[in-house]
Image 1: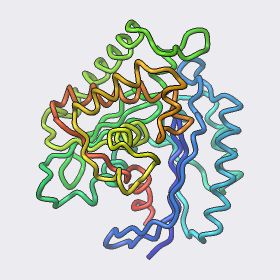
Image 2: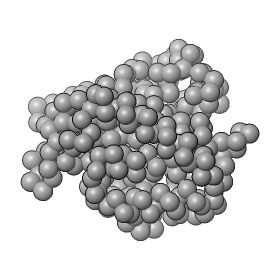
Image 3: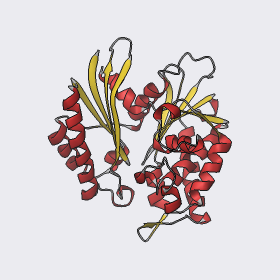
Length: 313
């Protein structure tokens, strides 16, 4: 077994996985998995630059992760940076800061590479399960972008489009620097139009409607699942491979988009950093389910991090 550390730095969160991985079988034994909301993509859609305070929040998390990596004695480290750092003019500041702290240079991967990691991480345990029809459609709803990947055992087609919970919130649900609470029907319609246009774009590359099993990844999906399951605290084991119906997703999306900040914050499983962006994230998931025509989403806690860890070994 090789002890590896995988870091996924997205638009909204930065996550760490330390695991022992068998290079031949791909067996993965998780030792440490953690996440921090750092909002690296704060304002990037509007300014084209990473904000100084967003960089500092991210570097603070990197310092914590460096300690964890040293404590576990990981032999190899891979740091993958996704949507926000692809888009930013000052991404060199980000690259230098990460290297100084962790001793590795972040790889600013393409959307297609991101999709490959997500598919591998999400479906490795699902391949061969008789009750799940193929092909799989894996959707990774991030802060700045959403990845769509169709495949059976391997990726057949993939596309990344610029719809994510943070980007949609900042683009349509903010007035005078403040998130509208709750959003107006006009604002929700604007988000919906953006999502539908992005789905049209994704469908040019990825045959969405051929999918027989929808697998949903990342915080927006797992939070919706936790609410649907009625959890009083976040429970990865309960969420992993849960199956949430279209009706549940639709009802929760309506609830989130009609509630105030305080009402969303009071939901037991709601991470404080997700309170203002979860409505847009849930709407992305709902629109995908409607476009694909599936009646449920299979929720996976294993995602791009697991794919990155497997790639190291």
